[in-house]
Amino acid sequence: MTSREDKARLVVCAALGIEARAVGHPGLHVVTVGAGPHRAYRAAARLPDFDALAVTGFAGALDPRIRPGSLVVATEIRGPDGAVPCPSAELLAGLLERVGAPVHCGPLLTSDHVVLGRGERAALAATGALAVDMESAPLAAAAAGRPYAVVRAIVDTPDRPLLSPATLTGGLAALRRLRTVGPALARWGAAVGPRRVLLASPRSFCAGVERAIEIVERALAEHGPPVYVRKQIVHNVHVVADLRRRGAVFVDDLAEVPAGAVVVFSAHGVAPEVRAEADRAGLRVIDATCPLVAKVHAEARRSAARGDLVAHIGHAGHEEVEGTLGEAPGASVLVETAEDVARLPADRPVSYLMQTTLAVEEAEEIARAITRRFPDARGPRTDDICYATSNRQRAVHAVARDADLLLVVGSQNSSNSRRLVEVAERGGTPALLVDGPADVPVDRLAAARVVGVTAGASAPPAMVGAVVDALRGLGPVEVEEHAVAVETTEFTLPKEVRS
Image 1 (cartoon, rainbow, N blue to C red):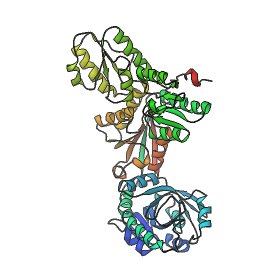
Image 2 (cartoon, one colour):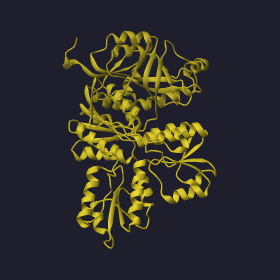
Image 3 (cartoon, rainbow, N blue to C red):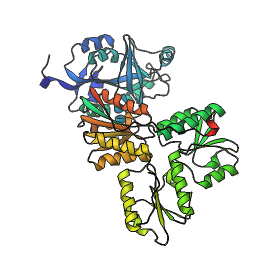
Image 4 (cartoon, one colour):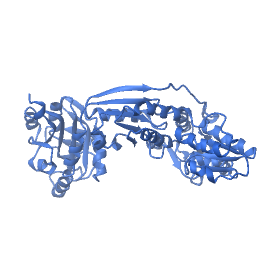
């Protein structure tokens, strides 16, 4: 056994010398193992000690959509002894995509012979494997549970077989692409190591988001696709993509919806003029507005009816804000910062209300500025910032102070997710907003041995699990749950989908 000083942090295996030279990079320990499973088995027994193992080189595509010069990052290696998972595949794939490589993530199959015929390729493709090589499975056994990654550059495809004139151009394209793999593997290897993961709780879906998604699901089940949804039902790319696959059609304008069709209003709510437009078009409306947003709408109408100026604390352009401002368009003014308060007219009483997804500290600072200038200003009867938003911000406070880095799972257009990043950063903890593992920059993980993980109220719980699994692909992970509240809120469904 070698000493710790002699251990290679990352060993990279390539079958051929030309592949090894292409991926050569300072700091990488590259080993040429020879072509074929038998040579790979022998080489696996002679590898130097290591913390992580990677395999790279050429491969043949099984999926006809993959072109020569593309990269396949294996999510698992399938061989004669079963499948070996590669949990950090999406981390590595995202890194390669950000340097401009065309990347496909999925299973890779190891064969004991060169796969040539179209019939055999089609049969192997039917198993779900994206590509085939002859060395990865034997080397996977050598990893023995340590971090393991496989990146293959495609030379031949079902319509451009290995024994054809196109092989030369495909090989040159694959060779050029391999030269981008070495630096990426070096960065992946630098992030390898044990970690503590601090899970903030509550996190992920809130009752309003669950209700909105269930409304679309029930509408699809009852009416069949297509069911139209005005704007995104909630602000998350994974939720939207899943519902789109099931038959939901997302539109920005009701003019895109055929007369008489079923349309769902999103959880963020709409202005009365949008409801009137739907009535004029004869649309069958199902309203998925979050009840807590509907409460703010009612406050706006009530304040305007008293003759108040309604100062709406929120962010311009957000769908919830547009809907609330539309409830009292002649009486409402958007207030985004404390500085905006000085510009409010002082010719009538003032009421203020808040976007439900704001950062609590930010909103309270603006509210204080309003009451300093207008001591008689009336605030909401109950908190406008929803329980889910405030709970998730409290949970971030609980984990961020002990973390080197906080990962917030959520989409870029999710206001409540972005506020979680801001809460952490205001406390001095670096934070990143990621839709999933592919968005996590491995360079930021290299110095982060304690990682906080949370999710915005519109992010699926499965995405949190996927991020934690990806971190496990870099080394042992100790997970600690930090709960600040238990959420039991439930909302009833609208009558149109309650049956």
